[in-house]
Length: 189
Ligand SMILES: [Zn+2]
Image 1 (cartoon, rainbow, N blue to C red):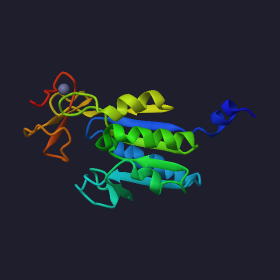
Image 2 (image 1 turned 90 degrees about the vertical axis):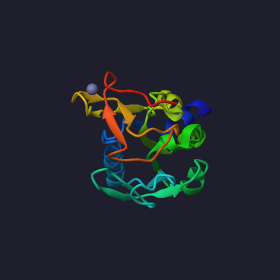
Image 3 (image 1 turned 45 degrees about the horizontal axis):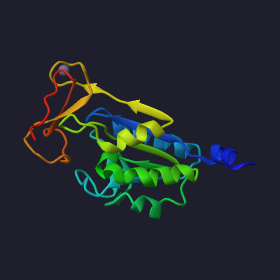
Image 4 (image 1 turned 180 degrees about the vertical axis):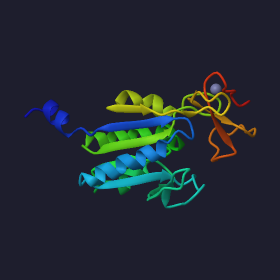
C-alpha cells in the first residue's frame, strides 16, 4: 500500500460547529459526544481555562446541561492529553485563536477525529481566525443560528451590550445578544 492510500485510510474526520452566542453550539457538541461514546469511541473534551463562567472542569450549556471536560490554557496542551482517544471535542475553540489549528491538523493526520464548536464572528463582526483556517479542512460544517432579539429573525451575530475593546470577553445572558446581520451593530474599537 502506498503512502497516499494509507493517508486516506487513517486521516481523521473534522466536524465544525459554529455560529453566534445562544445558538445551541455546546448542546450540539454534547449530542455529538454522546453519539460517539454510544458507538464505543473514547472521547476527550477540552475547554479553555479562561472560560470560568459556570465551571472549571465541565462544559455547561446556557440551559444547564453539563459534561466533564479538561480545562487547558494553551492549545499545545491538547496533544499531551489526547493520545488515548479516538475523538477529541473542543468547546469555545475561538479562545485558542490560530494556536488551535496546528494541534488539530496533527490529530487528524494521525487518524483521530475532531469536533470543534465556537463563535465564528467576534462582537466587532470580524471572523475568529481558527474558523477561517479550520472550515476548509472540515468534513462537515454546521453553522447554527438563534433568534435575533430585535426582530425575531435568524441570528448570525453576537452583539456586546456593554462597551469593551477586548476581543474575547467571557459573558453570558445580559452581556451579549444574538442579532441578525441587519440588526447587528459592531462594538466600537
Ligand atoms: Zn434582526
